[in-house]
Length: 236
Image (cartoon, rainbow, N blue to C red; front, side):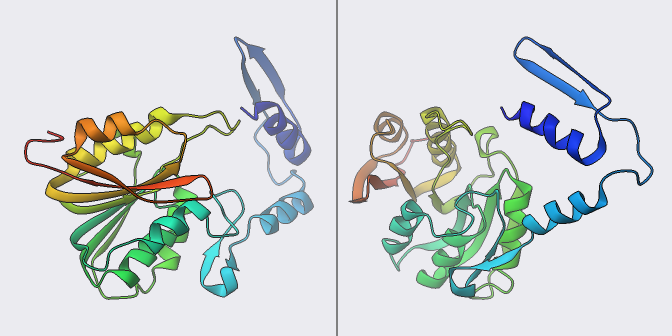
């Protein structure tokens, strides 16, 4: 997706050596350059991508990452309902630029360590900036990983606003379902998952299969926030 426009960008910046298309795929290239690319274009594009303050300076972000210039309403719903008694080792799956992780540490003083998992390195770099320093001096790890491939075990708390569509906006509920299954495997018995999603997405079966207790905590603006507690023998 986006290959045709990418080819146009390369042509504008550095000239095009050639391109081929086959089986709905596209490959394009340019010859090695020794400074002959369009320097003004490179500077202009670089400025468009610059890190900048958002939300009144509370966070740093950049174009291209999810909800880059605002607080996503689903994430805001999750943050507003984080119980203050959440405690122990926590993980944020699909952490983006770090909004939910910061809210978790600010709202839940008993969280003792936090791992941020994010597949997009540009977003993870922003999360490091936005939690430097963290609201409280707790151990943090910024993990550049695809959550659907699995995460480390033995968490007490997991929070997530998982991705649910492709760049073309097609729904991909299987991604969120996989996030839920991975969270179930990684939580200790009695551990809690807080996951937010579009109201229409079919997560209930995966939640009920993986957790001992499931409840909808809140609904707003087309989103639902679900709390799931891992029972003994679940998710393993």
